[in-house]
Amino acid sequence: MSSRQRSQLIDALRATAVLAMMIYHFAWDLGFFNIVDPVIVNSGIWKLFAVSIGSSFLFLSGISFWLASAKGINLKKFLYRLAILLGAALLVTVGTYKANPDTFVFFGILHLLAVCTLLGLLIYRLPAFLLLFLGLAIIIGKPYLMSVDFQPKYLAWTGLFPGPTGSADFYGFFPWSSAYIFGLGVAKLIIGVRQENIWDSSLFMKPYKRGILQLSFFWIGRNSLLVYLIHQPILMAMIFGYLHYL
Image (cartoon, rainbow, N blue to C red; front, side):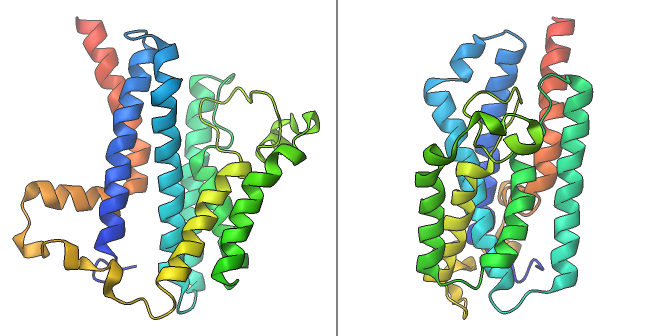
């Protein structure tokens, strides 16, 4: 989707989610280096903060899928975006495995987004109310489907293993895919096929009127995957450098 066709509202919401994610990851990194109590940043309000950030990314991705596919899917662009997403997910897996094989990310949010993208291709033509029902069914149905048989990592991605996966970042298909499906359903319900200007730039200043902060803000929203991949190594390097030269 070109910059002229993009929804500035979605870009702004995505940029907000990215900035919130960076705040959480900075707090998590402080816990990782034992600057603060790790328990604090992995429980309570911080855990709720992390859940809300992950849900918002998935929800916005569901909306974006409908914005890109409502008038028909460009298979070439679809496969290109999917390939980038799969490559980024593989990069996270390889990088975290080299860092710590015991807690490597085998099914994080990027892996889930790739699976949800394929799922979206199968279900995006369903009526909005069926999509919302499907999202709700995934949430309600999870407790009844859980089993220790899903413990192996090649099955644990489903989210149906009742115990810990050991992964540093885990987004199981159950129940997290529901946020993506809800986004798809809500977008289809509100926007429809015509995609009126409700999501367009009327709430924001035109590009030539923006200052550096606004330009940077929308750049983050347009390049959220890149920011996601590079921000953690940068944050950890900064904290490590601070501790090393303190």
